[in-house]
Length: 90
Image 1 (cartoon, rainbow, N blue to C red):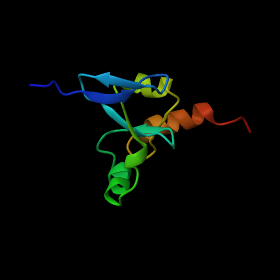
Image 2: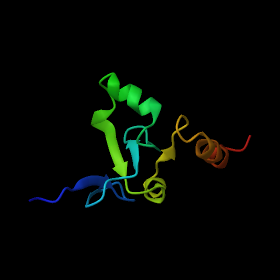
Image 3: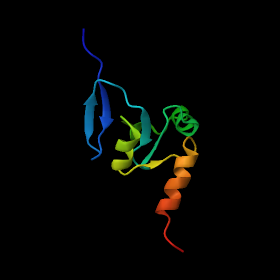
Image 4: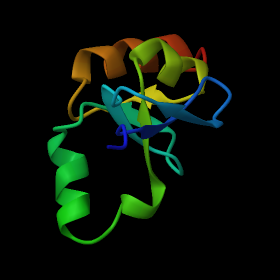
């Protein structure tokens, strides 16, 4: 019997083989991370897109360290805080 393994991204955006699945999904090209049940991601997947850029993270700290931002749809509070912190001064 073979153990199941999962391919995640680490904080350096390098592939990481893990015995446990990721807790967050992301879009590599858009550098966005969110919940695995994100309605926006699921809509894109249902339309046949997104999958070629789909990535997974073990946790939020790893996604942030890899340079990804929170999804505005499934993580609105975290996105608002990220946007405030990353918006240039006017």
